[in-house]
Length: 619
Image (cartoon, rainbow, N blue to C red):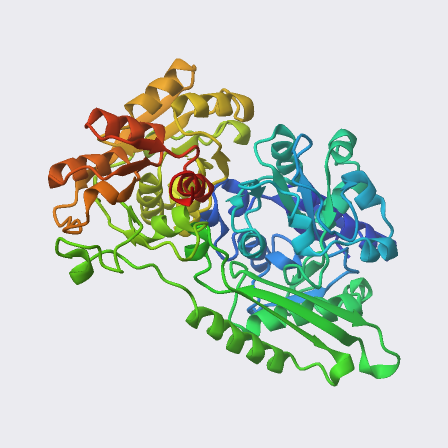
């Protein structure tokens, strides 16, 4: 018999997984040959745009169908849950540990380790633990995230991990870092991110093959997350050996010998639950099932199942700095027969209740915005914010709920329908030197996300957000940035880029026609190669209707951009008694326009606005 040709992705971890299957087949007396190939997902460094269904498996299954390979080895969690009639998962070898690890940057100053069942441990120690010790040495998810400082940047491209982390800590900034496991650990070590969520199974396989640097494992500390409070991705830690139905390996005894029945039963129960909920790999859903072998012909028995799901619109509140709604559910054989249909029904019902109870934000329009002179109405806002509802929620989410906040969009955005310089993008260079798309403001985030939806090539690039507000706006638009620079202007970003980005990386900067020059000049002065262009402009809102008789001397207005200052000047109203600015540029615009009592937030975040409120109104 000719050697069995095994297809795999070309990444180091995928090769290790394929070699594992090859060795097990070799022990069964079967000759093999491993053939590596690139996948669509491997040819992209972007955020969610790069993670379309089948992005990591499509080329492999195509090779099966054209007989280029005899079997392919996938991470089971990467496979779509829908069955493909011509393909068969012939074997699920014994499952590796399905836990997630929460790892901290070496120089991170933590806020205290909370009440976790175990203190942080070196990555080396976590990976060296035996199977039984690993199952015992876990931390509840809420306790594990507690040490992270406010606004910490969390590296993960998984919607499940992003939604789950933000449900516990809505102040975190999610960065969709991508690349090999080793490259993600490098981002962590460099301080480009503060923490990283990673599957323990991949790290274990790398460590056992000698591919994980000992220095990295020794310098990084973290937690192993408890599967009951933090369920894994369906099938995480399991491999799928996929073959062509009716092909040369269909019914081959080696396939049955590779299969581990408890591992298959648990992983397929998790995937089945996701399928019952109509989900795919991009749905924020986690499930962990425990299956044990049973004597006799019955096969493995499910002992328990734990699931966690977030509402489909989870990015909207998360982008505003609020905890997204999530639902937890569990079932145990101790309560009777474990019924996945009943569990799925309970999840759907609870999820519907969460969505129905989602909070809203009151805009300042209509009759309430046209009050007459005299004593202020009980509906008079305590704080007016010159932006839309989502931005208002993001900036005021930490204020006391009794504070009356009103959204008053002061500007409109005109997007230029002109070609972007895609011809300047060179992806033939090493991936570490690929161009970065710099997204400089929440408005730019919306413009860039819409453009990338129409021209997916831009979604292949890695994106860096300038500041937390921009990062949250990208998340709300469905494209979390790969990195979020803790910077408020071009000079700060240039310093950040010098520390974490290869100096050979070109920077692409779409910006507003009314601004952007200072950012580009700062980057070029720092020696960066920049391609910049005006992608949009901002106009004062012609329908701007400030509240009449609002007693300007007592009013507080939070200006979110210099363009909002221009809109206020054009309105002809007297300056409010207190002008708050979201950044230094906005504060400068206020002072230049003649505003008095200008106060600038120390940082353009909900925490910064909370401090302003406590300093002025709270006192």
